[in-house]
Image (cartoon, rainbow, N blue to C red):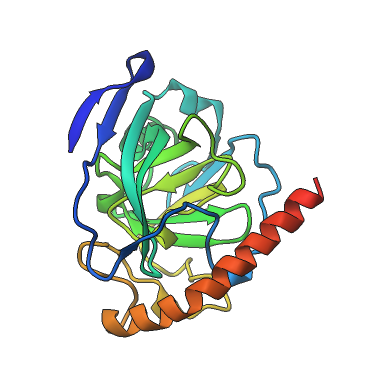
Length: 244
């Protein structure tokens, strides 16, 4: 990954243009997208960053302004949805998760040994998990901006996870809480969706789209459902904006 200095001296990382991963096609726009059950759910506090840190930790804490002490970065990376569409060259702004973890979580919350199963919970009720070893990669961010502006409702305000090497459903939007656990006992993929939809790692390069089901079959199913999901998301967003 190439790195250069961006505006205001911030480090700007650029993944460069690569061939699309297996089973993906390029989509022309980057719209609000997600599971249909969450189409009409929106964050209750999209303007203020407030993260509850808990789980197998010695001290549960709430972090907000503390994130402003971390180095800012900008990053250009491709976004890959598990439903087979990709959008290239998204410019994200935020802080590295590795800095957040080592500089804030470790000293303030003090995760217990072995608490490497990380659950992200969103203001809209969505949740997903990742392994700590994957989250500590240099290109994993807690982002609060996209392009030249804020995330907006479409892309996860006030704060979201950006993990380019993992499918979009792992990149949780509207973050409200992050939990560090020793195992999966306190986590389930959001009801009513089955756990098989949630691969333990969800790595794009390995086409880890789901558990137990072959990737080629998941591609067919998701691609067939994608147009309807887009329409549902678009209508829900229009309704939300009409109510503002």
